[in-house]
Length: 254
Image (cartoon, rainbow, N blue to C red; front, side, top):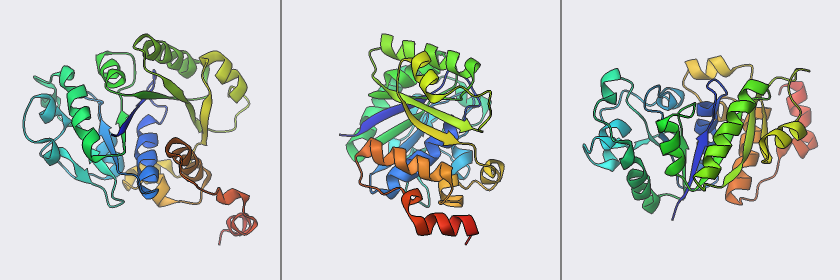
């Protein structure tokens, strides 16, 4: 039976969808049958990040009771499975969010891990994504506005009796104004399970529809994603940054 993890954030722009795309690929590379689902119905972007072409069947169709669930599943070149959401404003018509949990439960049969890419904010889409999951990961930045909204998201998850695995602090830029990990844990009342630096080629990755973990597998972003994926799935994995030759090659840009 699959493990369903909802990735949510109270605030937009924290890099949540980028995280979902890359963590999905990482767990797939570790041999786990993984599927990512774009549950952001109003402003979906997961398909763009993964280079999924225009798709005739999406999550919106399933929420309207149209078509077969397997027709909405697309295979990424990394073997990661994807259910995108429709990008047309007309896709929003007659969708029934109450069907989301039923759809997710059907996916459990054929997968080991399911990541839900929730909508930003605390609206009904985000709440439905939390309700459909077993566990929650909160994505935030090391800034007070983002942390404030992340805390609200955690409180909602607790009210819905959904365990929070922890927080991923994303897009770290090394600024003095950024809040320290220990203070973030104190504010949120949950452990920081990942601290991920901003990648300077992020725009290139999105433009070329190539996830960072495929674009540059030796950078810190990719390594932190793999580290977290290994921890989430109890996979034995060695951090290459502990290897002298790896560090030397990276320093020399070989």
